[in-house]
Length: 547
Ligand code: C2O
Image 1: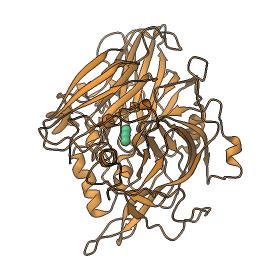
Image 2 (image 1 turned 120 degrees about the horizontal axis):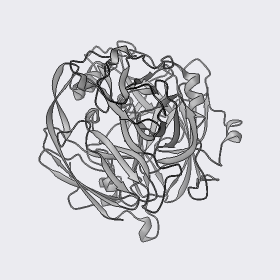
Image 3 (image 1 turned 120 degrees about the vertical axis):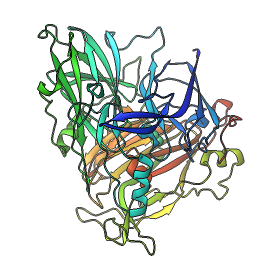
Image 4 (image 1 turned 180 degrees about the vertical axis):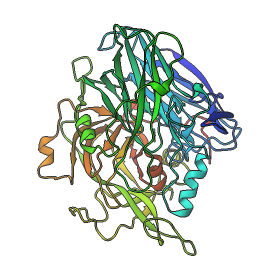
């Protein structure tokens, strides 16, 4: 491989959306941010310069970061944030993976505007396991707030209530014609030729919503998920959770009507409680020339907002390609088993404050195994790997099963209160791990896109209701389960994942809904060094930011 150099100047930029101009954080003045393109085996060096008043760090979502944990990017987990005027060079080699990934800011809610595609092409000599497409197009879904997004989440911390929902969804940063826009330039347009195959690299960068996606009068063939090839399947409608990426092939019509156009559209899948937004972002798929008026185009018909059965069926279609060239190395045996509940809970309202949480004496929080994770004021990885001690920064007793017994059906336990803590699970190098992730439904059932840093995992099982340890494991797929970095734990259901802890470092695992992440639905794994030099984390780079 070669080394690819990028420079990310984090700077302010005025951007107009929904008829309002707002100053946002950008990379190099671009929104969405620039594309990183590399090949499997390449080294990538990104020099990030912070020219804004905010602290920032950038995460390369889905990159394995083998032996390069210092470059992973989540603030207060692997690094202290890059402060104003500071620079940090992220340096990693892309090993054993290829496909669509992305990068985003990993502090507060700054990823609302700091995000972009990270595309890993196969090695030159290795073709795709499908016919070479005519063109490749990244399509990133996002969410736009007219307000400052840090203020939106900080407001929720103060009131204890849910944060304000976004003002629009976006496709490649653009809200589209179904919103109140002031310029036709605020609509994403994909110009296509008849009778060709396009590879659409779909990325859900929305902060808080699973999305349905469809293109009128066209079907799609899904070929890859989270940068791992899958057995291709056809669908009209897709579901994609925040943090997930999906590659689809779009075959254009051989003989479309002259200068015809079609709408593509996305809108949320949501079963949770509280306020939600069921608005639709649309873009245009255009054959030929001219300026189609999107007003006259039919909007694709998407499932209703709470179409849980549709989502479960869609999710069951994903199977690893699992051939000799791209095998699925599913751990067949497991050394460590965990059962984690994921969901919302409550914390008491601070004294002398009225809260607008579930009751006026409580505020919303979110937790795993009833522990709401508090970010330390220094970075876990830094604190551990430079001193080999927890140093009072964190404890190693993250519970392996829920603190509040999880044995109810239907009626949630009375005690919804969660405890706060900065707790990790320590794993020896190369441990095989199974985690059953169970949505608690305590304050309403809701899906949770759980994302693991530094590893891919296999989704060996999924189901609705409560996981049954006596019956469900017998149904696990250990042959060709989908391999991903983000699994949507089904609303009111469970997902079982397996991975091998073959990467020394501290690895964040959290809900990729930023509201739940901010409320504490997060924990970390501390994977210890192995015996041999290639099983150890090298010392930190000299420019690693300090807190
Ligand atoms: Cu895409 Cu921890 O994030």
